[in-house]
Length: 360
Image 1 (cartoon, one colour):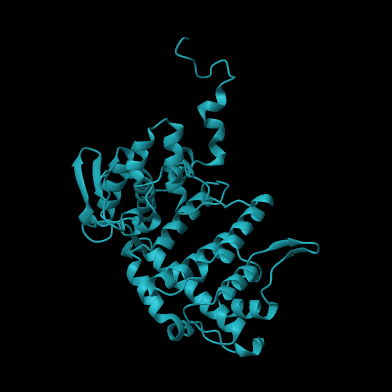
Image 2 (cartoon, one colour):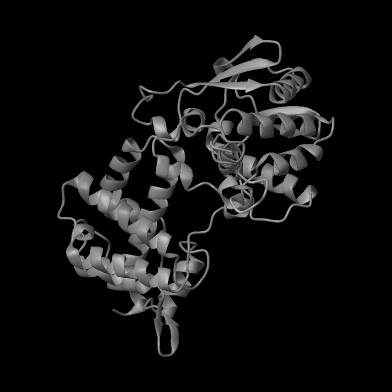
């Protein structure tokens, strides 16, 4: 199809071609992050389809189009090097219209996610689903295997364990910003490795002081509670000791008693509206730079760090999961960071001071 058929790649193309699917997905998705990621994926599908075929996307999408989407965006090894099939001019236009961040193939995880979103759109519309066809599923499976053979692995953010957390805290001074950041970092870590969206949504109405240096935060909503709280867990998350001290100092300095707990700060002295999830990630990254830490840090580093530190200290897995709200043991184990393998006691079996048998 001629690329001249896509003179304008605009987000409003989606409303004309797949608005029903978007509305249903957004209504179903309780998480703001999920909402944004689904909408972004569908916008990209609409722009790519318009560029590739010269007409708006409609459901059901043909099976051949789903296959074409995969080969257009997944890099493969060939005799001449790594290749993918997205036409260069279309690639440039998608980048210029801000549907893509940069030219080139997409990460396999991104392609898998966008296929999954398209599949969900078809399921909600009860339309014939091309993403469930053997050709599409087989192609994705082979793409995963090829990526594994090339040594490609999903990247994880660097964990912030107690050592890194102490370094971040050391950069927080007695200013209003320093008090806020200290409280925020301790709160996110100590309450079970809260996601950045959960920290941004934290409200005074869910916080109560229960004793000296003791708070309890009631996590009324989280990513894993979208279908309601789990029967075998409690939404109450303790914030104790130094974390409670930091939280109390921030509350006293800010004068806040209601609404969002963690706020923007104006000109170093004024307290503004709630921080966004992105702003919380920025705080983590900024403090990591000030602390001189090396790694790829983000808001999620506190969550993976909490789990990793729990493992290092021998905390029972059910206790960790009760704090994090994880449902899958496999998901929790997946957070243990490669950088901490030397701390695994099972690696010390040959040491003289290593673990002893009961007979010893």
